[in-house]
Length: 236
Image (spheres, rainbow, N blue to C red):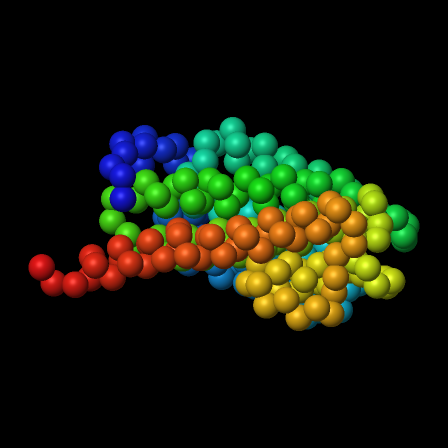
């Protein structure tokens, strides 16, 4: 991997004093295994748990924590981390107000915030891991985390498009974020079951972009990192 002095210069915001030493180490370490675990847990929670007032808000909190930890692991500047935190707090506040009011309106602003942060996070993770001097297991976990975040980004993009310019799918139905998550990862992995079909030029274009990006990512970035990791493990 390309040598860079940025790893030594990256800002490391310190946790407040008297925090638990394990929590401090987890925050200060570049732990993509933790990021990957949070992505899986938050996504499974959103898909498996029935949607109600409580689980809706818990999902926002889990995903917000996941994004903050991912951005922190990628060593973004403290100003970027603070801006992301403020956006996530805004999304949580809007979700709380809309959910408790019982309104049936789509949460457009939280979706926009999710799309913005989910577009930023995989980019900074990939940029960071390509600065690693040695490819480690954490580097591979970082690449896999970025891959899953790409799937989440397209899922929320589809949900946003479906909210502002319905319908997103050709068949009529009351689609939720669970349907968009399912469709996004089926598209990302190019499985193409055909049970959900995009309708219109914009949805079709987005689907094609995701399918191509998913394949290119696996055969370039992940394959390159895995092959480099294997060579590092072999004796000279």
